[in-house]
Amino acid sequence: MKKFKRNVLVFTSCFLILFLYNNCSIQGGFVSNNDFESLDTDNFSAGGSSTSPISGGNVEPPTQGTSFKGSQKLGGNKSVPFRMLTAKEVQYSLEDIFNIGLSEVYSNNLLPSFSENMFTNYQDEDINVSRVHVDGLKQVASLVDGKLTNTKLLQTVPCLNNNLTDACIISITNELPLKIFRKPIDSNLKNKYIAFLNSFKSEGYKGVRLFISALIQSPSFVLRQEVGSKSGNSYTLNDYEIASRLSYFITGSTPDAELLDLASNNQLSDQTVRKTQALRLFNSARGKNNIFNINKELFRINKMNIDRGLASLFTKETENLLEDIIYKNDKPWTQLFTSSGSYLNKELASHYGLSASGDDFNWVNYQGQRSGILSHGSFLSYQYTGDPELTSPIKRGLQIVEDLLCKHLPPPSDVDVDDDPAAKLTDQCKIEARKLTTLHPKGSCFECHSFMEPLGLSLERFNMLGQYRTKEKSRPECSTIEPGQIDGVGFNSMPELGRIMAGHQDINLCLTKRVLSYAFGKFIINEHVLSYNRDLSTFNNNKTFKNLILDIANSPQFIRRDL
Image (cartoon, rainbow, N blue to C red; front, side, top):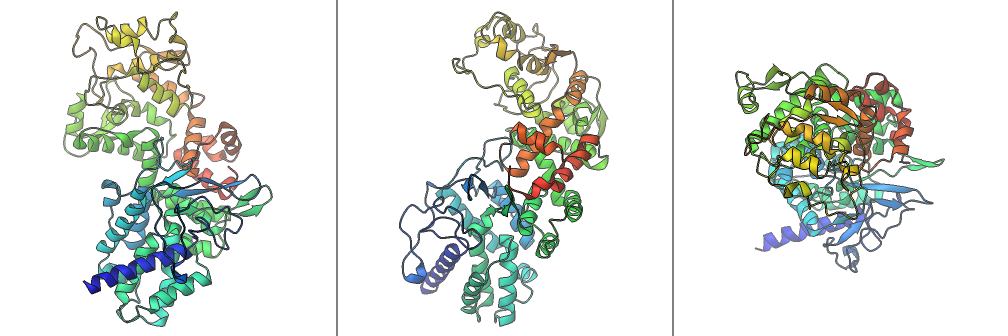
């Protein structure tokens, strides 16, 4: 019991020392060191008096209600975004640093989500740090410690043994904070770390494990601090900040050794170097996974609330199409809408009422009833409530025009959106009921609903699980086949809809806006999209997703903080 208490005390002391001195002053606020002297420091407070344990006081971790602003003042009217790593970013970062698997971080919901928007990394508003998040980081640190066998630990710290040498301690304090914090530490902090590890010279494995656990729970790990230095009317990021922004944008994970080495030599400000690195990251396994994730979030495919086995089949189908369009053939991104077939195996083809053989996913041509990603079960099952036949033309149409064409329709202020007049006409076929109510030219709903509902009605030919249907299941006399329209342009089939989407004047500009929003984790206004568009010459010529990513990463604005 005495040994247990001592371990807990040592860990707590270690955590508190690091928490206080690693870019953090609880008394004065969240960020306070010589890198951020001009920051306001009252936006991440533990909600009570806290003093340094060095001076004999005590500090509690942030309690529920603790918050900091996503846009904190930095001189004049400019602001600096502090972005909390998402659960996936925490998982991937620690997996890559320590070469271990940490799927439990996401699958077990150890860390809360900060966003219910399209992209999970969207943090345009103040972030509330709850006790769940603080406790979650402790669980993550414990999980890492459990996965770090001594063999794995030696891969991370080759000089490690139970008797720590001075040279090994110097190596550890040089390398581990750099990997975990994504930036070098100053000499004062390094001396504190050295002093801590010196107290474990005869218990090297134990000391390093405690050291790693504390670093993982530090604000400098979980917070991306891309501050920059004043340069004219904006702030230019330093090379370590560029490395962090570039890596999380393309791979969803921490900068690797090559990026950090380039940052140490101040090379990432060079456009040629940055473009080479962006392409390398794009083609990496982690990069491909994240590029797929960006697209899945854009189409809201990551929010499937269906049977896990069917969701896996849907995901594989869509990922295979993304692989074909984005990686194998580097085609214009809009060909996702016009694809004349899909990648199916026997099980998924049977679900769709199509023919395929074997367990492997292979190309299957459609028979004219489907076209591209809008025919995928992954897309059509969004907002599934348990009944495959319970579709919503309004929600489906709104999803396409808002998410993919960036046409915003504000909710009516004087209408109860949950009171659907068409649902009251139980004696009518579903499509006819909508024509008599929300789509009646003289009705009060027509002006808004004509914006998206004809598009949604055209998708009634699919149930919520992507299965093609021509009649309502409970009313075989009622047809589900209905022409649609977008911006007054009519269509009668899915291939026609795919061609209209691919050729729509807003489709590529909207894609640019969405990917910029992902890159910066905040809502991007149209004015900024148009400004950024001038730097996207390669994408504007060939419209491939790869060149959109590379153009953004290589643009002058990417290494500045003025958006």
